[in-house]
Image 1 (cartoon, rainbow over the protein chains, first blue to last red):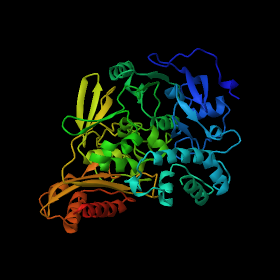
Image 2: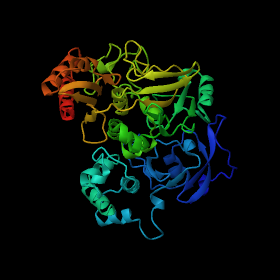
Image 3: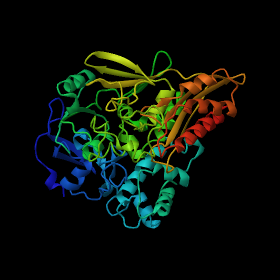
Image 4: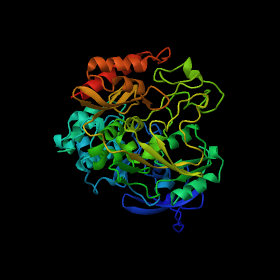
Length: 186
Length: 328
C-alpha cells in the first residue's frame, strides 16, 4: 500500500540548507514512513498521491471546505494547506486509521447509525474533524458559542454546529451529522 | 505553484539571516501556512524561498514581570484561545480568535501569521484582475466593482481593501505590542499602529521592513474593573469574515466612563481604533444615548462606497449595542 511513497533514503533532517526536494518521516496511522517529497506537496498530496490513502478528500484545496481534514499530532487540521515538508516527523491519523480492524470507530458507527451523509465525499473529513473536536471538548477548549465550558457538560446542537463549521456538506446532511456527533459526545 | 526552496530556521537570528540572503519579494516566512500556502496556490504569492519559523522555541504564553502576558509568535490560534492565562486576563482576545476561521484552521494558524493575514478582497486574490496591492500601479477595480465587504474608513484612491483578522481587532483594543527582530535589530511596534492605512502604498499592509520577523506579542495587565466584549456580524453565523466587528473595553465609575477602548474590524485596511468616539465618551455619563452619539462622531468622516453604505448603520448599531451591554 505504501510502496510507491517509500524512497529508502536515510533520514536527513530538513534544517539549515534550502531544498526543493525533501526527505521526511511521517508516522501515518501508526506506520513510520520515510518519504521524498516536493517542497510544494501538501500533506493531502502526499496521502493521496504518494501513499494511496484516498480517504482524505480534495474538495476546495483552499482550506474552506474541510474535506481534507486529518488528525495531525492528534489535532484536526486541513491537510490541503499543510506543507508536508514543514511537518517532518509528524504523526497523522487519517480516516483509514480510525477503525480498530473491522470494528468501526464510535464516531464512524454513529455516522452510519444516524445517516450522517448522502454522497459521502465530505464524510471522511467530517468524521476526522468530529474526532478532533470531541478531543478539544474533552480538553475544555472554549468556543464562540460557549466561552465557559463548565456550563455545558454535553454539547448542544448549536455548540456542535459552531465547532464543526469548518466542514461543509453540499448535500446538506447536517441534521444527521449533528445527531451522530451528539450521540458520540455522550 | 512556483517551485521554492524550503529551509527550517533554528532561531530568530538564523531566520532573519536566511531571509536577508534573498530579494524581499522572493522570500517569505512560513508559520502555519493557512493563508500563505493558499495565496501561493492562487499565484498571488510567488516566493522562491520559504523559511519555516515555527520551531524557533517561541511557542509559549507566559506572564511578564509587569503583570501582562507574552505570547510567542508561533503559538497557534487554538492554543491562544484555550490558554488559561489568556482566558483569565484577556477573554476578549480568546473570544475574537474563536470568532475567526474554523477549528482545524486555528489548530494550524499562528499568532504571527494571523497578524500578517492578507486581505480577502476578491480582486487581490484573482491574478487575472488588476490590483494595486498585488501589482502596484495596475489599478483598483473594487472601487467601482465588487466592494460590498470592503472599507468605509481610511481607504484611498489606490485601495479599499479591509484587514480580515479578528485577532488583530482584539489586540488593537488591548493596546498590545508587537515584538519584531530584523536586520536593524529588535524593536517594538504598538497596536494599533502595526497595520497601515493604504495611502499610495497599498502593497504594504504593515510597518514591517523586509526580513523583519515577528517574535512575540505582549499585552499589558488587564484594566481593573473593565469589562470587555467581541461582537462580530457576518453573512453566516460561523466561519465567515466580518462585515463589521467590534472589540470593546469599558470601565464605568460613578456612572461615568472612566476607560473605553473601541476597535472595529471589517471597516478599514487596518483594525480601526475609534479614537474619536473614545475621546467623546471619556468622563461622560455612560449610557446608550452617549454611546450612540460617540458612534455617530466616529463614523462622521466615513466614506462608504456604492454598495457598502449598510456598514455605517451596522457599525453604529454594533458599537452602541456592545457598549450598552458592557455598561454595568
